[in-house]
Length: 89
Image 1 (cartoon, rainbow, N blue to C red):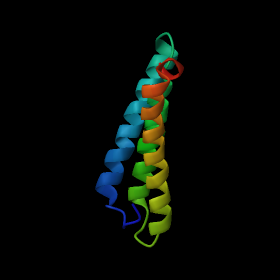
Image 2 (image 1 turned 90 degrees about the horizontal axis):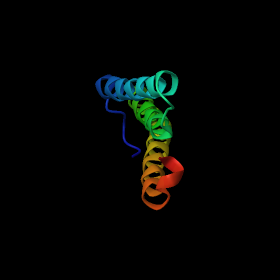
Image 3 (image 1 turned 90 degrees about the vertical axis):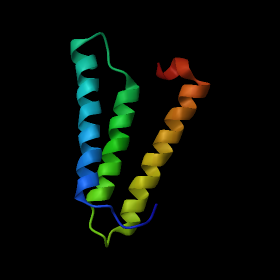
Image 4 (image 1 turned 180 degrees about the vertical axis):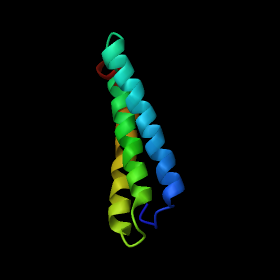
């Protein structure tokens, strides 16, 4: 988790996924009946992963914090989906 960032290629990949999820959320929110909070959480998670990869190698601590927060968000989302699906869906 606290290793050096993988570089701009992976950063752009994760940020692209974040913008795709954000676009899907916006589409469902504004053009359809309503957006899913899952897409919003996943887009923030992917965005944090992307920002972590774009930081310089000297910022290992901040990179690790972004990765830890993103991983905790993913685990929390999965736990909510398993134990309280009515709250999310």
